[in-house]
Image 1 (cartoon, rainbow, N blue to C red):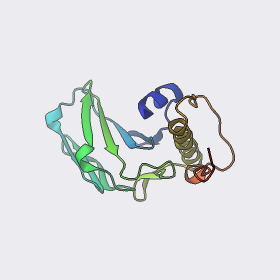
Image 2: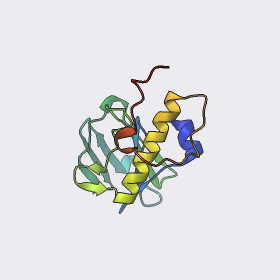
Image 3: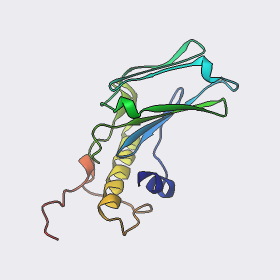
Image 4: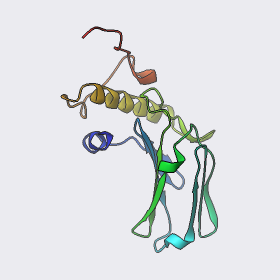
Length: 157
């Protein structure tokens, strides 16, 4: 479901020296630019539940402890057009309030504006899931959206 929401509403990327990363309620996406002509044999990628390591042609690109835990069995990486590595990590905590502020603990942090936009997007994604008959992809949100937005679960239907 989140894939369709992202296609309509776009993503909020956090730029890094090697590429960018962005997130949905369920997943974290990492896009790493590599020299054109890179082959899969030149890529070494370890995707653990709490750590990540990526080496390309023997050079360390990313290494460290992830901001939150992920489901390592569901993590994947692909090399596209011999110039872009795409990594997909499945979040363990898939609530709208679980907005990663950085990819690694203390590294590749989203600035305040990007963090704000990421949290707004996750809140709208939560609203979309809770109200599948509505399209929130072009919606704007203001007010209390930190931590996943207001909790309407106690309201009677």
